[in-house]
Length: 244
Image 1 (tube, rainbow, N blue to C red):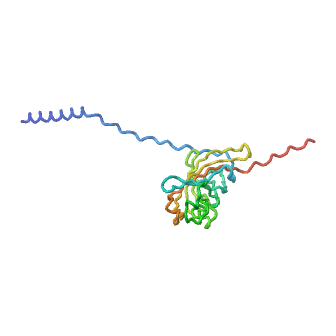
Image 2: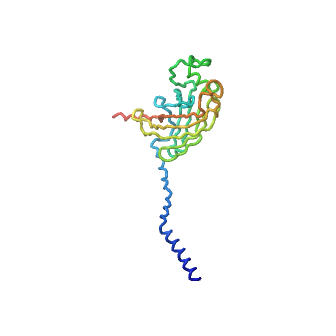
Image 3: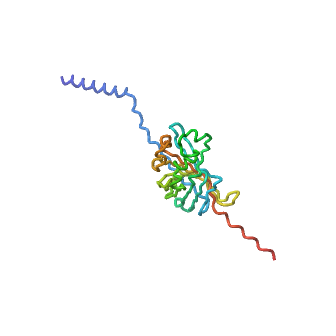
């Protein structure tokens, strides 16, 4: 009896060993992918100081979903901006921006009053300026930065207060340094260019919350700025002393 039990036990062990030998090998555990560290921030070659936007080489536009069909875009054509650069500590740099709400332009080619029966505005641009951008409550749209961080390479994050129609809310913009020169080829002054993109909610600013515009527009507004800024021109070179 004992011999029979030992034989059965050996048979079970042999079958288990055979099953293990025939089983496919376990799949190797994939190693976690290595995450490359962000590149170091781009060093500034421009000096510290106050830089003014060049309105001839700058644009400010916004996009919003229209009737759930496509993004509609408009731009503001009159604005001013000051950039205070701290070359030694770029995160201490700041930006202030002011735009005229009345300067909104859409290049609307249709007959606005014919297609918007009962609207109290003569043009689409007037409708946007007054009902959308709060022209009658606050003629100026303003932005004042409160912090700036460098995210690596030529990218950064700019946070500040954006005021539209008398309502001010904090907004975050993703910033990308487009270029910089210590001496502009024409003005000979230092210059820098960057683009900024951010999003706000129409409902946060009370924009077009009633009336004919409300049902036609999405809630999210995308804002995009591109521009060049110029620092003070270098002082004129001292004249050579006259020969004696």
